[in-house]
Image 1 (cartoon, rainbow, N blue to C red):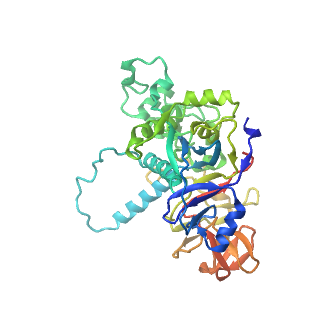
Image 2 (image 1 turned 90 degrees about the vertical axis):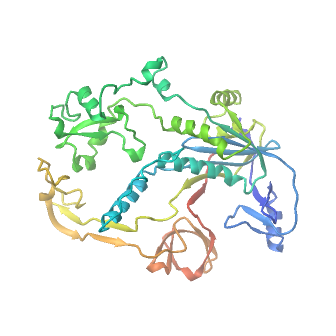
Image 3 (image 1 turned 90 degrees about the horizontal axis):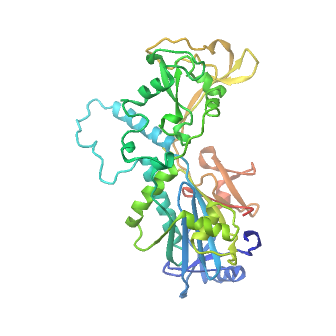
Length: 452
C-alpha cells in the first residue's frame, strides 16, 4: 500500500553538456561536490546540480502523465520513483478580457486606422486561446522533465471523448444535429421559451427587452455557455448589489449540477495534437489505470494515477520531492490599478467601498428602477485613487533569497520604496543590497507538498 512505501530525497543531476543523468540520494556527496567545485547548481534551481567533470550513466526512466486540467507527472525506474508533481493552471478569462480592453482602447485612440479585411481568418488548427494556452502549458511541463532526468519512455493517459454521448448514452446519429436549442436562433430565444419569460429570482414575467442572460457559474470560474448554466434575470434583479450580497450566487446552489465538459474537451484535443510534439510515446486508457489502482488499493489522485501510468508498483520507493506547481503570470500586463474610495454606511456605521454603496445603474441609455444605495453614504473616509506601476523589479513574490545580515533564507513577499527594500513573508524588511537571490519563481510557483 502507498502508506508503507519508503520515501527518499533526491537531487537531480546533469553533466557538463547539460545531458540529464540519474538522480542521487547521496546528499552528503552532493554537498562535497559543491564545496570542492566538482559541481554547481544548475540554473536557478536548488534541487538540480551540474557536474563540471565528465560523468556517464545508462539507466532508462519512464515518465507517466495523467493529463487533464490538473496535470499529474511521475518518473519511475529501478523500482523507484524519482519525481512526482501536480501542476495546476488557473483560468485565463480575466487576463484575456484585460488584454482585449487594452487593445480596443489603444485602437480607439487612432485618428485613422487602415481597413483590414484578411486579419479575421483563423489559421488551420486554430484553438480557443484558453485551450491553446493549456495545451502549451501541458507540453511545456512534460518537456521540462527531459532537461534534468534521463527519460526514455513516455506513457500518457489520453482518450478522445464524445461529449454528446456523455450527456445522453443512447443518442442517435440525427440527434447530434438536433440538440436542445434546435430551431432557436440564439441562446436567449431558447431560454425565453424554456422559462416562459420569467425571472429566476422573483418568478415574475417580463418583456424580452428587460431580461438578461446570467451565468450561474462565471466564465472565469469554469462556467460554460450551455443552457443548463444560464438563467434569465430582469434588469431590476441583475444588479451589482445582488452580486455583492451573494444573492445571485445562491441560484447555482438550487440548480442541478451539470457535467463539466472542459476536461473531456481538452483530452480530445490533446489526443489529436500529441503527435505534433513527441515522436515516440505510449497511450494508455483510464479503465486500465482504475483496475491497477484497485489491485494495489491506491487512493485516487492525479499524483497516484501518474505513478501507476509510469509503471509504479506497491514495492516502488517513493520520492519526498513531491511538488505542486502553479503557473503564475510571467509579466503584469495591467500596470494600472484602481483603489475605490471608502465611505461610512449610515445604516450600520461600517466602512464600505463606493462600489458597495453605488446607485446600481449600469446602463446610461436606460433609466431603470435600481436600488439606489448611494443615499447611505455618510462621509468619505478614504479617497479613491489610480495607481500606475512604472518600474520593473528584479525580485518578485515567492522568490527565495539569503539575508546576509541574519544569514537566514527568506521568502519574498513584495518590494517597497521603489525597489530598494524587500519585504519578507515574516513581515520584516531588509535592504535589497543585503540579500542574495537563491531561487527565482520565473512564472512558475513550486511548492513542496506535505502529507502525501
